[in-house]
Amino acid sequence: MKTFVTGADGMLGTNVVLELLSRNHDIVCLVHPSSKSKTLLGLPVQIITGDVLNVSSFESYLSSCEYVVHIAASTSVWPGRNELVNRINIEGTRNVMTASQRARIKRFIHVGSANSFDPGTLENLGTEANGYTGWKYKNDYLDSKYKTQLMLLGEFKKNKFPVIIISPTFMLGPYDSGPTSGRLLLSMVEGKVPGYSKGVKNFVHAKDVAKAIANAMTMGRLGEAYIAGCENMDYATFFNKVKTISGVEKKLIHFPFFLVLIGGFFSSIFARIIGKQPDLSYGMVRLMGIEQYYSSAKAVKELQMPQTPTDKAIEDCLNWFRANNIKL
Image: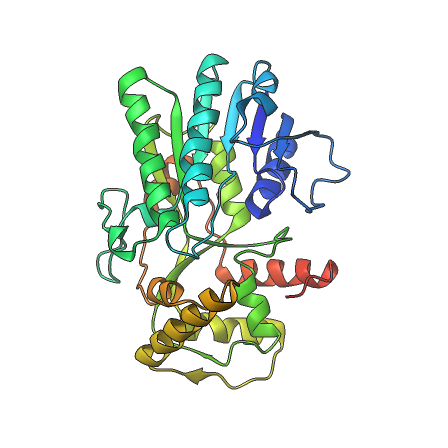
């Protein structure tokens, strides 16, 4: 099988490429010209440089492929309103979708976001049946991922476009050369996180998401979305796990949420004055304070998605950072 992977050199992309190689796929990797990641070096894949906003930079490579895994996206959440985020996530996805239709791709696996479904509670976990009320956060990353989901599922209903959407929660794992989500771990290990506040996240190992994506090429139902997560965990539990696994000796302080919110507010004002992204903006704090309880039962049942403990995801992420001398 021959597969076209966008965003192939990111954390999830690299894990997907490695999983597909283990299944004997021929892989064409689309890498952005500005990328500095070296995670694909030495792998038996075809690497092309291109941009999802420029169809001519990648379309000719799709004609020989049977499957597409579309991971490339902007995950920027600051500033909240960001036209480039909309262009990359909506227009870019439309470009890859349209090119895939012309190439008569067998299956199009799109990486969405669990945030496109409202989270539930500890007693009633969020599922794919939940609606979306993320508009209230006025954040183009969240909104663009939801709009993209609507576009793709709409194309399935209208023209039977063979799409399956994999919607990860908060991923951790190796090959996070950015770093992206792994910044949360590095901030803690490097002593830049003095404590924690309220909030719950669903954490998942990037390797498990990669397996779900690979399985979706032959499993699952077209026109469906699958939340790809694992453990629901509050920040106190999570950071204590990071402390134990990393060996960092540090007492963490519990901060009332309103104080963190105030700090984020003034940090955002200062960031706008100096024109530099803040470490923690007002919008970021609002998002962090959400209790994001999710269920991945559908992905486990229909895609045979593994459920690796968060401890292992933390360990694998930190070990890769250390081996590759990745720091903030």
